[in-house]
Image 1 (cartoon, rainbow over the protein chains, first blue to last red):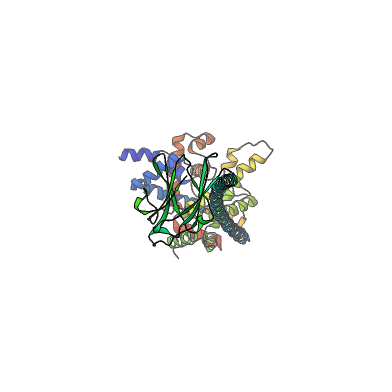
Image 2: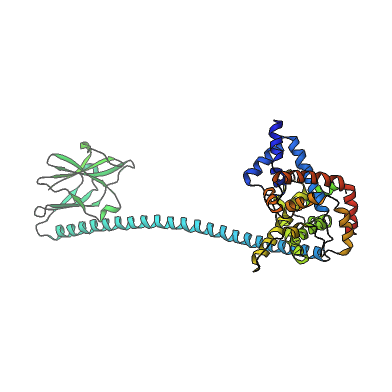
Length: 252
Length: 189
């Protein structure tokens, strides 16, 4: 170990380190030796003291006024640094504001895009609905206006005396409609449901809504010798008709 | 305030970025550092520039100073010496003139241009044998490595090393702290 220290001290690494002339690698080595070996540390401290003594032996009185120059120079440096810091702070605020604004606008943009998609979809649905309704109205017009269309008046049986409906059937165009004019008073948990028996199968045509369907014609599936039924069903409709509750039938 | 206490106080002020640190540094070290700068550049105006630049660097680098790695003076010396050597080199590189380093001129004990009042004291101070002094100056003030000094001064590397070690030891013997403090007090007054 002593040999290792001696070899180290024989190099000029410590002197180079003293004068800040070592490479990064050498610096690490020297600092490691100083930290590890008290002998090296002692030599280094002596070297520092010697350097100070040596340098002091060359001391010269510094020129008059130089101190003031240096102090004002440093004051100016600090002022410009403070100024720079102020600008940096201001710039940081602007940057934070911009980032927040970008974030806000980005999200707003996303929301608008989403809204736009919803609106576009709604327009498409409305368009399809309108087309469907227009087609329906056109068919209704064809049926109602056609001289071959037969009109059937439907009245309810004793279970629904107030029920009045008109059915329109056109065998040429193979279209049939029903218009429910008046609905009987039902219990709160009941509704009227429309059915059609086509080729021996019962087809659910849906629940008749009191308010909306008065002025509308409900399309019925057309078939030769089909029969339409109106039944009283539990509120919300039923999957199969309750035969006991048939209040009207329309043979067309 | 004793020297270590003063040093500690200055370091604390430096780390607090208190401008008073510069004032205290100047009061306590400017003469030595100016002497170092002058020794390297050998010109009053240049030495003043060096000292100014060095103090600005000291202020700017204050937060990088690590008292566990170097004494305050060592750190100040490094900055001043390197600034002076850089100044000298940039001045030389700017010059159109062909540079011829006259070793004997560079390493002789230059007192030319110094206030005559200081010459006596300088003579008292520089009692160290010339052969050691040349080596110490070459290494401390001229920015030479031991190898470069060996080549420039035409002295074997081993001799450079031993002269450096002996020279430093002699320095300690001749310029002990009390003598030096007396001289410095005289210089400042």
